[in-house]
Image (cartoon, rainbow over all chains, first blue to last red):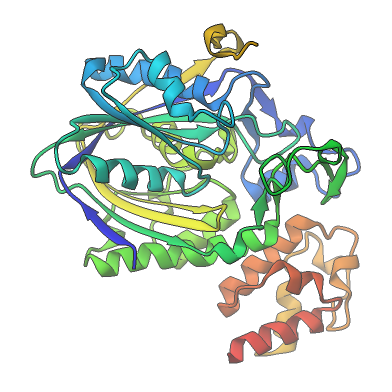
Length: 356
Length: 78
């Protein structure tokens, strides 16, 4: 039973970087599609997304991190750990967290590592990094979470890189976690080629048709019906079991923030939880499914200006690829929410592009 | 669990249910407007109304509304 209560660590601030270019799904729906853009938006909740062919997740996280460090007036030398959670590392090796340590000019006395995760990634990253900090040996740390570089023709996926600033604070009540896994669903969302099981080959580039969309074995291929069914069933269970385990009332939360995969899915989850839909912010209409960054991006884009000056109770649940899920409950007191950072294609740094 | 109720609930997942006579024998995936989005709304309806989680292969494996009803009925018993 993966229930955890991690004390003495608080979320001090959140920032998000997105590509400045916006793509309208009306321009992407195939001509022979059975559904119109209106049908698509009605069913998925996703109209547009921020997208770049050039920027990587780390570019988005880097720009968001610079903004957040400045907004919090942190001294970079105090940052003792950074964790990068993504399914789109800059390179297959080294860990992208190492590149970010250098690019952000952080102290060398800084632990840095990657976690490969999608939809549940923010919750997993939060749990991993806050566990590292609860003893008080590391006082400040950054969690960088997101995904960019998904294929342009994917109507659902948007690009974002977020940063969560964590701080050690004695006697802070911290965060409550529930983490779970059903690896039998490993192939529900999968990029078949490019890893060790099926290394890149000419076959990887051959066009295959999935639900009327042209894809290849280097794209993320999803069994949409299975993932949908999984989400509507597991998210309410996880939230209820966390609340039961730690004896709190999830309905007393100020906000429920769900992973942003599909509007219908989230409506059903909210209904099953008997939670007030007005307290469930959503960012998918504008940003699409932003993978692991969807929860912090939703908080930043929808709640900025509404929560910074008071104490707010959150319940957040991420679920998807793995299949994996995680729920976290915490109180944010005077959290800093940085202005959304729009990143241009020119904001890549040549220094971190490998040259032979 | 009643097959006629089930047929009506499936019909509601289509945009223009009145223009088509739905019955247990209806091949619901061959209706013109059926798409991957319709499949999701059917999964959502079955979860919401019957508390049953359908898998993609179960929907792929059935042709008529009655086929689907039988799956839901058998899952309800277990």
